[in-house]
Length: 467
Image (cartoon, rainbow, N blue to C red; front, side):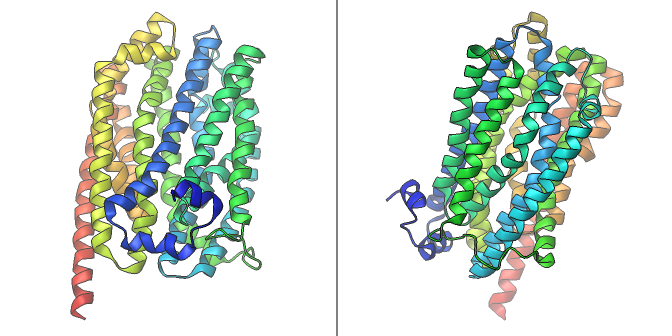
């Protein structure tokens, strides 16, 4: 019986679900866990792409694309707060399940859900109060501000539900339900893809229609995810007595979740610097062009993220069980697969730039700017797959400090200095050049750190055998 059926009905025992993480062939188990995750994340990527295409063609104003662009960093901040709890919880749950401690896993679940809701209410309230200054910080001009502000005003209420959906979708996968986790993304993306065109073209609601469609989709998917954890037949479910805050559990969740949190915060910061530079050297057309790049590479990045989501419970469980050979083989296969997909993206982006740009925009000047952007920014994109897998490897093993450092190398340590040096010399081309420079340097650092860590674990394995 397939995982989709078993995952939905709970017919497969929790012991069987978890045992296969430490015994099934690596290629088979990575495919079983990664394929549903890849399908789910790619569906979400396609939704985001289709949403941008629909907005760009439904509203006859070139400023709308730039308006949507400056909302991405704010939404990324919201995602960051969700990942701070959700990613940390998923990793800790994988490790303690590997140690056969089911009660501890339930305590982590109960604490993390409450924390997600609490932090979500706080940050959405703060965003609502400081919305216009935030948008100015991320590059909104007088022309793009009305679109950005209207979109986010309607999206904000659904961001807490978005955190519950995507963060605990990862927990669902980590506890042995990769197929069901896939359906979470497919339900949300499918519903959104139907409602957004209906509200934009049918009801003529403008940009708020796309936002309302997103909110409705988040309500449905959040209910779908949460009801899974209320079922006693689920491997991991809510239990009486596990909701009392345990500060040791919360600290361990925050420690591991700090890596993806900082990745998203760094992404928002780099977007602020990038958008400010783009506005200065290329205006709203340049900000719109980077939307095309981001939306295009999202497909390939989300494939790699799906691979990492499938890899995470395998690494965490086998690390907790001390089975390092399986850990190394999983890492190698995931890294090769991830790098292959981003290499494909780099080739497609460089050779089909004009066709890609025309999907998202109608204005000839904007299209040419987007073509120039893609030709430069995709030069180093082929390396990104390996870098993402390496960062997630350290996160999956609970090595938050190393994961945090790697997550900051590309966006903060290398790109931000480059953004202050190159644009004053080369103008807009200097902004675009910062992307491949960050890709190249961060990949070198990731390679050295990964090699050192693998060597360290091999020494530990030899020492344990000798003992």
